[in-house]
Amino acid sequence: MGAGPGMGQGMGNMGPGGMRPGGMGPNMGGPHGQQVHMRAKRQRPTPQVILSRNPQLSSRVGALLPAGSNVQEASAGFKNLGQFIAAAHVSHNLGIPFDQLKATMLGPPHRSLGQAIHQLKPSVNSRHEVSIAKHEAKRDLHAARRKK
Image (cartoon, rainbow, N blue to C red; front, side, top):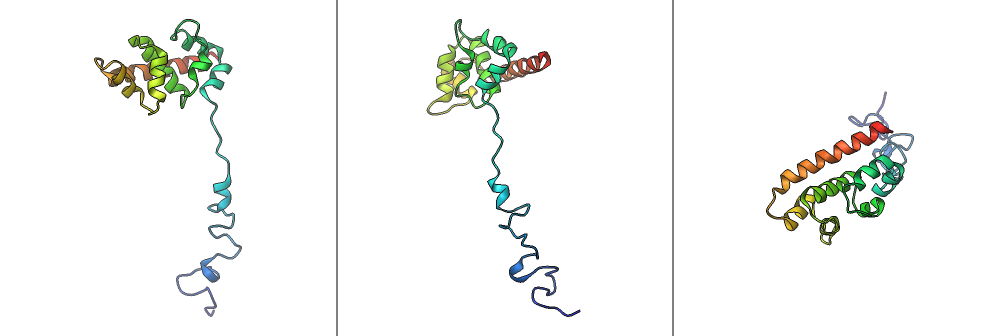
């Protein structure tokens, strides 16, 4: 067998320009082509949507917020449900008004839960309080899943 164009040593089954026959190059729609980049990412539901679909969880978290609070409205702006529930626990556990904690976290500038605790109540161990709140949030989420 002779070596024709694109069939040189080390080129294997490559065609002209380093492309495989059949047009499966980097921008030709193959597994690594543009179609992969054009697929829409599946977006997760917002904390508001999740809470509206789960009355048990909504009620459980609502008990941590000031009387008369709307849980869905309170969750607006948080990046995920776990962050919101942990913030609700911190507010409840440390007596920090939820609106102040939320405003400090969501900014501007955005702050982590630990940074917000440190700013609003510098006398407490913020790392420890975040750890407790995350554990409590996980417990709430697991309990809500079991009741479904």
